[in-house]
Each structure stands twice: as C-alpha cells, then as structure tokens.
Image (cartoon, rainbow, N blue to C red; front, side):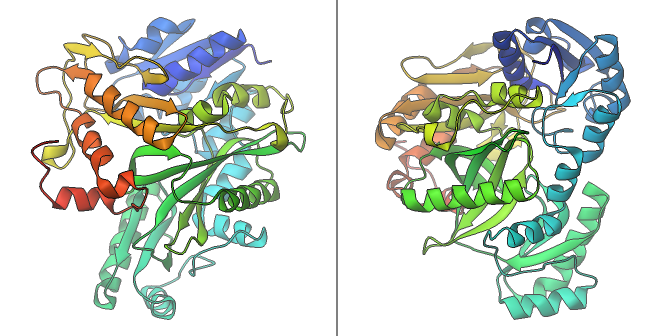
Length: 455
C-alpha cells in the first residue's frame, strides 16, 4: 500500500480523497493556494503545503510547485482528483520521472485517449460503435465541409484535444459550417494549444449514458454499470442517476462489455469512464473516455457499495482487484444533484460570497460531499461546485422524492450567494423527467419556458 499521497486538487474532491486515505491508513498531504488557506481539506489532511497565489496557473496547475511539495513531504504518490492536471499526460509523466506514483492510468494511455481522434480509432478497432465522422484530424475547412455534407446535418465540430464540454460547436445549417470550423479551430488553439478538430454526426435528441470501469495492472477488469448524465447545460452536467431510466439492462450490459473491451485494448489502469450517446431508438455510440475519477462517482458507490477512490489507491499500489464481474451487484436507485454557487436567473452566472448559513440535508440514505461550512468564503477564482447531494432508495421514484425533500432542506445563504438548488427541484418536478423520457435538451427546454409559480 502507498504510504503518503499528495492530493493535487482542491474543494470537495480533495477532501473526498483525504477521507479515503484516512480509512486506508495512508497519510495525506493537501496543497492549497492563498485563496484556499481556510479550506476544509487543509484542516483535515495530515499535512498541508502552500503552493502559490489564487490563480490556478500559479497554484493548482503549477507542476514544479506540486512536485516540490511532494518531495518536501516525502510523498510517494500523487492523486490528481478531477479537473486541473487529472488528465494531463505530461504531468503524469513528470510524476513517473520523479518516482511518484500517479494515481491514474499510465501517461501514454492518458495521451492516447486524450486525443479524441486517436481514441475514436482505438475504440473502433476494439469493436465499440462510433457515430459517423472523422477517423483522423481534418486538414482544411474544405475537407471538413465535404465530410459534413457526406455525414448529413446536423454535425458537431470538436477539438481533438478537447474535453469538459469545451471546444465544440453544433452546426445545423451548411451555411454556418465554415464559420463554426474557424471558430472551433481558434478556440482549440487557445484552450488546448492544439488547433486540430474533427467532425461527427450530432444527435439532437440523445441520452448521455456513461459506464464506470475499474482495471488493475494484473489483467483484472470490471464495469460497475451506468450513470445517466442527460440533465446538462452547455455540456456541463447538473444531475446524474443510476440506473438510467428506460434503458434495458441488457443494453447496459452490452455497453459495459464493450467499454471493458476498449479499456483492455489500450492497456487502461485505474478508474475510468466511457461516455456514450444513445439515440431515440436505443442505439449507442462512443463519445470519449475520462481518464480520472468523475464528479459523479458517488452515484456508482451508492448502488454498488464499492469505494471507487479506495479502489484507485489499491490499484495504484499494485494490488489486483479483489472482486470480479460476477461479484458486482447493483441495488436500488441513486441520484446526484450538483449544488453550484450560481444564479440560474442570470444565466447561471457565478454568485460567490461568504456563506453565512450552511445546513446540509440529512436523513436516511442521504449523502453530502462538500467542502462548505458556515463562514466559508466561496472564491470567484475556481469552479462553482459547492456540494454534491445524493439520495438512494429502492426505486427511482422514491429516490427522486427523497432528493426533492433533501434539496428543500439544504440551506446555503449569504450576501450575494445563490445556488442551483431551486432549479434542480424544477427539473425533478418536470413530467418528462419524472417519466424518464427526457434527453440532453431538457435544461434548455425548461429555461425557455417560465417556471410554474407553484413550484
């Protein structure tokens, strides 16, 4: 087992990893920026090291400072959490070069799957279905436009190095394609330092369903079922659940089998997520692989009883999986709502400030992952996620009712502070969502219609 893990992240995921370390008897080291000096993980971890001022480039993305903190604290591993450096192949390689175990896939695997075009090629070779589109980066706007015409509109232009909902543009009208291509190429260069893009068919009415996998370094691999992430705004997820309503169990098993085939084909190790789109007829298509722990990983933990972060640490320590596919049992239904410090009435603009009242929801089968507390100053510098609220119940209907109660009970207040809790309750009350007949357009549909005064 690893002895000391430096957590190269902040917020709720840093605290989540520190708690997993504590339960495993592993020493944890938190790093923090000047703005996060009073954060919960700084107080909880066994040791904490200041790595720079507030801006991410000078702190949580400052690789030399992180490596130096690991050396000073005698860490033998680095857990990157999600976001920041978690899918940075160069960072994983730097860790390896400095005799630090990177808690995640090998650097070469991250690099191959981080390139969306290369990932598509690898998955196609493994038999995973793809949407019609590019098999290699496009060399010119004319080539891209010709391919779009061959595929048929609507299409989506995506950055080869993109991710997290950034670096993409949907094109419905051929007359708009050239502009979308130029804009996406420019954004890709600015955001990722890589102007390459590709084109694939766009599904306007799709479900977004992902498969969680675990792979050790000894040939062991399992999938832990699915999470439905269709409730999202501008490709940013707001609510996740499992099982995926309306998707047959045999379809999920097929997706899981193919996800494992794809993972083993590229030599995957650790926890990973294979993301798929499902069309209205139930056909599914590979979208991308996330080479890290997901924000929504607790949904899977709630229905399987498997601690994914502890499994990450065990795998990184060189241990084989202690269970096989036949041992994975999924029970009941779980829902996660992301409570972001944003104002839905102002296009989800960040609404940071000092939290004067913080009362998390409680009760049977309710879980709250958060770094918030009364008096916490929510910084404007970072992601707006304050808490993840989860509920479990034997059935989806019961889990949704419990979630509505929990959202109503969860109180976060302060001067200027607003959260997404009220909007999430509006999603829960939507008849299409309650029936499990929604798709990725549900949030935009709700935003386009005035809320019911009674909700």
